[in-house]
Image (cartoon, rainbow, N blue to C red):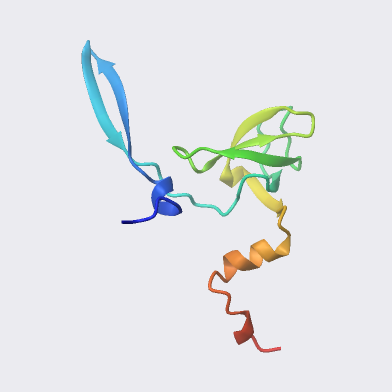
Length: 117
C-alpha cells in the first residue's frame, strides 16, 4: 500500500458539488502540481506590488499553503495582517532551518561526499 505523504498525497483528487438549473452536479478535480519550493514559515520578499499595504520589497512570512491551490501562498506581515500571493510574486529570502535545508533540497540523496574539494 502506498504512503499518503509527499507529492502524491498533496494532489489527491477531491469532489465539488454544485447546482446548475436546480440539478445537482458532482465533479472530480485534482489540484495542480506545486511549482515552487517555498514552505510554511519561510521568509519571502514581495517582488510585485499588490496594493498600497503590500508593497514591492516588503518582507513577509509564509503562514499557509492550500492543498487545493498549492501555488497560492498565505503570507503575514510583521503587524499581523494577512493576504494571499502567487508564488511568482515572491522571492525566497531565508528559511528557518538555515542553509542546510536548501542543500538538502538541491541534493536529496545526500551525495556531498562525491564533491571534489
